Length: 360
Image 1 (cartoon, rainbow, N blue to C red):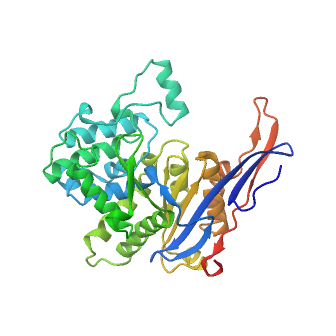
Image 2 (image 1 turned 60 degrees about the horizontal axis):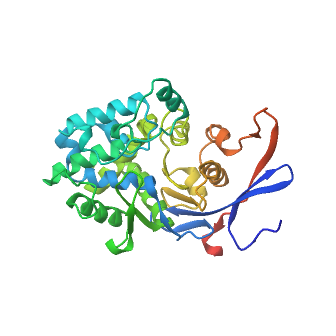
Image 3 (image 1 turned 30 degrees about the vertical axis):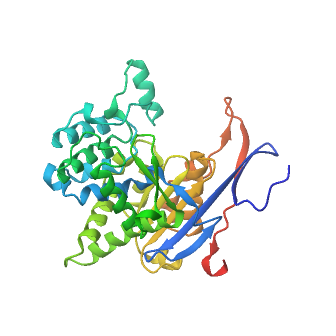
């Protein structure tokens, strides 16, 4: 089999000595100013970032004043950014958020679905449990948006519709925080029934670099910060302080943020997108960043196992964190490929070669 070398093949899966699958991907690495430092494939690929946009959507809700008005705490904010595993702690918190927002599960415009956790799914099957809207992995985002609609003085009915005042506010906020005009973002409907944005991949990296840079700025000084900087830092702290709510037991986002102990924030998006914001350190300085670092990855075929392996590979290539921290990702980075008898049947070969921007 001959590979098309013009494609940015980032991973090849072998069964024995035969190529079983190849995976095309794109990577953008930027600093806090949005300057592209490294790339692989097309760093400006127009990308439906799906749930990787949740921190920006949460920012829009936060800026309505909803968190203060309805008494949402940092854990609630973390769940607003989550693609959670529908564990009891996630469902209970989503229900509590609805109570705070003076809403009910029937107001949610997302649907129930099989959980992202195999362990939770097995438990549901044992108990013949039928998931409702509050069990959606996006229920925290939806509960937050109900509160955001109320805070704007808008009706909660139809909060999910593209022309609802809340969604108009969300659209403007997402574009603005990504340094794009409103018409620079394309919109579609997500799996959870809310509008979902598409924009260049490097702008996703820029968004997450901003999250990390905001936390750096707030941590470095007790003086007043712009409301936007304070809000972004608050989202960063919520996600990194409650990684178990952002994902769940054994999930990549949770494992990643726990391993790096507050030095980075990460979020997956459906169909193969991922973003990371890394706080400024000697590691980011060595990578050429002025301040914080943002990383965004898109796998063309949406393979999530390959996505996580590539995230771990990029962190290793950039030498982000310590070897001990990166070792926590080993099960995602280089998992053995075995059959049902435990026999090793193949291997993955990761071939991302990050190109410095000056070389492009």
